[in-house]
Amino acid sequence: MYWIPIILLMAFLFFYEFFKSKEWLRAVIFTALAIVLMGATLGIDYASKTTDTEVWSGFIENWEHIEEWDEWIPPVTHCSTDSKGHQSCTTTPGHWVHHYAENRIKTTDDGWTNVSMMPDGKHMNDHYPNKTSELEEMFPYGTPTASTHSYVNKVQASYSIYNHKNVNLEDYKDLPDYPSKVRDYFYIDRIVGSVPHKKQALKELDSINSDLNRFVKDPDNPEKKKSYKQVNIIFVNVGDKPKDYAYALQDSWEGGNKNDFVVAFSMDKKNNVKWAYSFSWSEVEILKLEVNDYMESQKNIKDFTPIVKHVGKQVEEKFVRKEFADFDYLQIEFSTTAYVFIWCFAILFMVLTVVLDMKEIGFKYNRRRYRNRTHHW
Image (cartoon, rainbow, N blue to C red; front, side, top):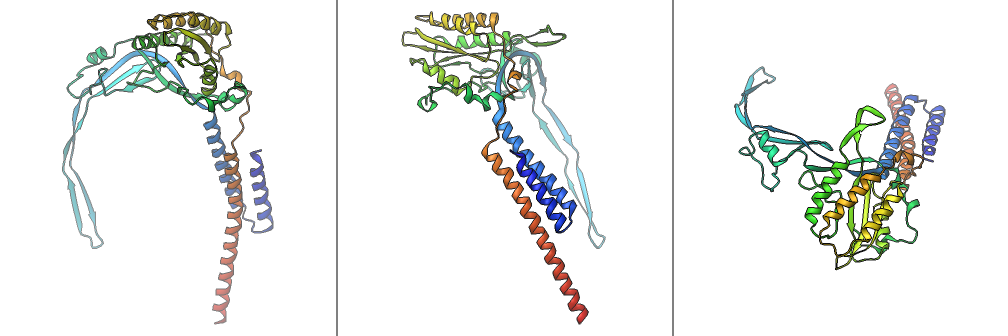
């Protein structure tokens, strides 16, 4: 129904100008401005509802180091002449400008990234690194990386149709946030919650995600390449809690992103997995069931790394990412706020038309009175 205020505005401007001032150019300009503003409002509203962020994985593939250098800025003289023809000049002295060394890393998932910190947390400076090979030693070729990228997700604007009917998110205040925060330029921790030997397990998961997203030849287009599995594996230990927390997590994350494979599970104090629940938009349901069965068989876990490896193999064997183009049929309803704005724009231009016309009538009237007085005098 967003087109109704536009039609009403156009009709109002047409009839007003037809019966009143005949200012057709003004009507055209106001209509165009209103359409632009209303279109921008609806576009912003649509983007706010459908823009989402997903995580891509890759690896370091290139480096660039640019040495520091000094640039001489020559003196500049500016002259001006006053109304009497006197000229005055000022000169800005020449000076040197120092350009600090620059260091960049290229990854397969996010291109070039400027870096200013070493992996150990120390700041880079003009003294170190001094060449590309030293930068390569800090960030070796093939190091797993991760980055965030925006995409259109119509599902998140309509996810309520997929909600678990018996789950109220207000009852689950302690659900974790979706892991998308990038740290140290290239890393996203995709094991949420506590697990044994988490640091090593995170490294293993980074490596698996990067490997599953390596570029391979596209069988449908041999001249091009595509991401191998296009998957982002995430583990979430919700703690010693009932299984409905997994359903709540799925609703809170709105099913995850199009490339996510999320393994939610509960681990007790003895590191026994009580239950597991995998969710993904992938339609390969057997994969989710097999991962759940494997996770629930894990007892007295000493190291989570082998579990990450095993699930990684399961995902590699059977995961198929769902094409979100399948959701193009979803109709996105504009928000009440957007409707209020477009109605306000329509009313504003109607009122503005009348106000400007009244001012013009008043101006003509005053000018006529002035002429009459002058003529009488």
